[in-house]
Image (cartoon, rainbow, N blue to C red):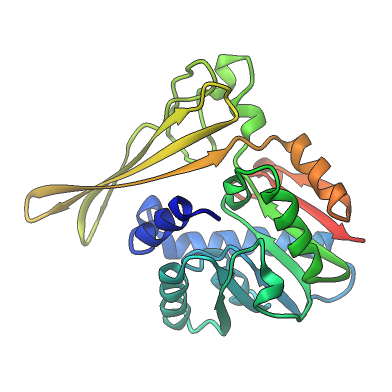
Length: 277
């Protein structure tokens, strides 16, 4: 990934959990949802799993607590360091490395039963060769017949011509986006109260003229001693439609591509699964 994307996640490492009402509870929920999808799609037992975009450890910890042997990588060193600390706090047995998912073979040679890449990470593949390289590297880390699993934002819905289809984003419950020429302009604020005080989280989206990508401005407003301070993180995402990802998966050597939607899977984003040929 390019330096601005790395800078985004480096800066977000200490604050990523603020997007959730209760991040630790979210881990439990996501673990149950992903475990159900993996069990549904696995052929035989799953002994080990690679999370190649682990961030601060949300899915890696979730699946380790479900009993999987988990190895986790991310290209952001601060995010990996935070993930290590969080894994220890959960008593989750996970091994970690710093790695760009476009160059996984430069870090290790072992293969896994499952490779996952969640939280819309594939949408950071902005250059034309980024997505093919990433998917080929992920397939290369799978045993024959191994399972690939990724989640992305539902861009098909967000970019639908029907404006009502973009009014409510189920990935961020209760947040409404106002349609502009290419898609929603952002999310309405969510307000959380906990022992640390009040915090407000929201995003502003700036779409490229061609509607193929957009900049996400992530804001956190936090209360401390009766005063508020604001932090801001920005990165660019590709509006990756399902048909584009289907085609890229086939070209990278995957087959049996299937989509699992939140209403059925319980996961907050659409999940795609495929098998390594």
